[in-house]
Length: 377
Image (cartoon, rainbow, N blue to C red; front, side, top):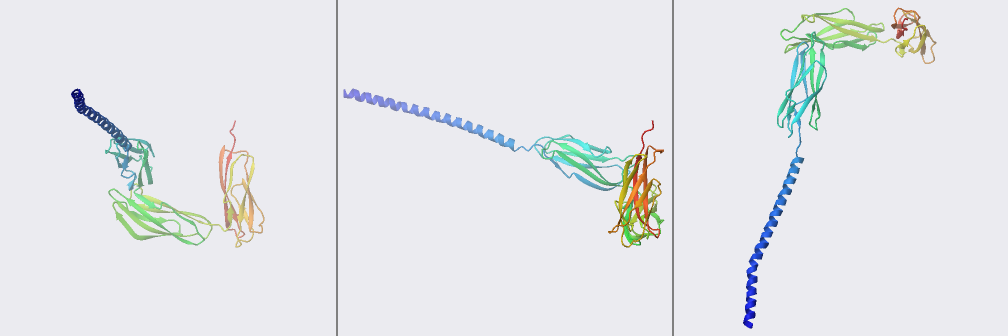
């Protein structure tokens, strides 16, 4: 019996030992399958986050411009001109462009392409052709507005600045000496520029009809690249009589386009009596009516005595009130419009002069009105 039991135990032990390798093999296979599944899952997660990060790092179209403004300086006013702006797409998506607006119809603008690939370049050419005959002169600014799909720069304004010059130019084109005291001497600087593509024009002479205006040429003549500049000192001695003063300086040149150049000159010597307001405005008035306006005369202590008024237009009358304690006087101006008239709409412009006892004009008041008559049946 003992031998049988022993035999049974030994056989069961042998069976168990023979089954153990198969269990270990099955367990290791399960572990390898689980590891492979985890590895595949990790790869999928990494790929997903990598794609998400790559998508988040995409910047889209981006335009980079080598300047949006240029100053071409002096250009002869009869000649066309153009300038090319360069740009580049530094993004990672196609860049689209379109011209949305230009400053004037005389301007031409051309994009060499409306879609620019990433890392590619493009050009915008802006040109100007003058009319015949030319009408534009002086400082000009021409602009073209370009729209893009760049979210950071949806619009770009390209600007070309230029000074369109004639063969003979004055800087400044007119001289205004402003208000001056009687007999006061004032000085202004004047520069005459001559431009030429082949031959630069020359100044032959200059003159001024007014004896209160004199000129001195400053020895600073400059010649550079088809441009000749001559400087002058203009000296004005204000008239002794109050009022507006106007004259002109005339230059004679060898230019066939501008043989004569005229420079307006003006100044003003204030009247001793100030007027508030400075003018009487009646606006639109109907015929057969009367309208009145009041102005204050600020009389200085240096202008004592009585005054009277003068007006060349009979429809305008005035009444001068006595002087008050502060040296002010009220002038009541009346406009009487007759029923009859040749024009349906008539613009009335005249002046009331205030004259002192010694027959000197000490103040002037401009008068303005529009007489509007009904349509004839």
